[in-house]
Image 1: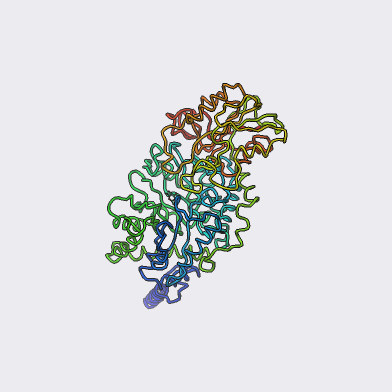
Image 2: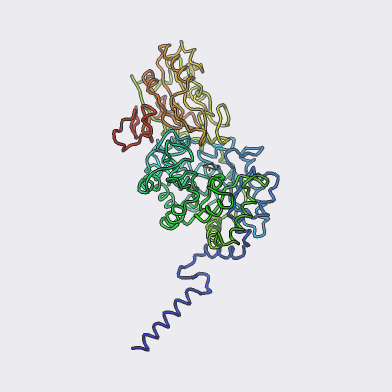
Length: 610
Ligand code: GLC
């Protein structure tokens, strides 16, 4: 008996020892290595520490201008185009040529590792002239249509791929709980269910099933965690909730995004109960990477590690050890906290054993795995054939459908809507009736967006009305609403001017004085009028709602204004449902479905039809 047990112990130990030290790369340790992991490990084994840290470095194009050779010199892992970073020729061809120039530098690096290029294509390929601009997520949330949202993301991916780029910093799956927040419009709405279903749809639309397809674009679920839940809706503020509420409200979108195949997640500026997300090891590593088994990589937000306490070196130590894998750096050599400093300081931290080499290897493995999955080693440059569909009619039809389904009808007295196409005389009024910049909102051509005719290829509401009505109809535009005496009906298009991020934070969501004045003027004329509101969120509208015969929440519909007239003239019915509870007053905010004493002007899910 004794000999038998000794023998079994020897056999057991030899099996354990074999598997632990087996030379066969495909059965390293107990876990069976995939061929993908094998490729990653083979490449990793050839890399110097400098090259590994280079892969963890993402640099903005403005910081590289004048020294693009740093791309190969430091073997940079990624390049991004921040909201306000630009090149001279912002046409699709201009961006594609620029991308190929950047990539040609990366391919000169010692190991020829291509960069992945990220861009905030958050409602279409919105930095590029001629791109189709979709409704912002607040409007897509009102569609409640995952298939349509997936289609919108698919079209966006095709337009991104046409410019060579690989990675969209989307979906934003924030759950916006306080409409004072300037980024409310980037969120699908106040309920985690919208982030789950529509966030996953955007991931699928961007990435397709096969990440290696030439029009598959890496998605980036953002911003982890709790960006939409800060106190008073302060951008980059403090989300003060217990862990149960954090998990119930803000985590479901990430679980769905990971399940849908998201390979990158962007960490959020905000803090959770006073601890900055970029230094939160519990949430980034224990919850996201271990509990949720997220196998992709975490990228920081724009210079976000600089917001941690301490100096740049301690910021780097804290964020990398917390679980950040790639750091987004907008600063050039000569500026504080620049990318050369980042590489130097992280190398020091590894040599000082303050950041374990195993952490570096884990981060680089994650990054390389994604690069192999998107097949960028085989196809590093732009496929020029993809340009054919850029800004195409088909793409515009998809956006027009999104606009139609996003519109929410809040009021329609005496069946004022739909307006007959044979109406004799229609006057448009209001600052946004012929302003595609206001129609698109922020993140359009530049970070904050801009009023005026900033993009090409779209249709304003005025242009769309002219195209929709009969040839005998008289259409005119009176911006201040003073010339309406001949009108049978007046269409007043007002709302927010473009903004992004903290510039949209506000304590007052009432209509601007200019908008109130136009509505007052039209009301005095006694003519029946319809208000179309362009806004990134519900606004305080009760006084104006009473006077208007009909009132439509159009959100930030993007380039295809014809989607609005399709519904106003009755070719299509209203389908939109509020993704936010609509407050009566500022004092009611935050007001969210499920609250006690819930008494909004219009409840979450509200939307009238013809
Ligand atoms: C911004 C935003 C983030 C964006 C990033 C790159 O500050 O927070 O959503 O993706 O920087 O532009």
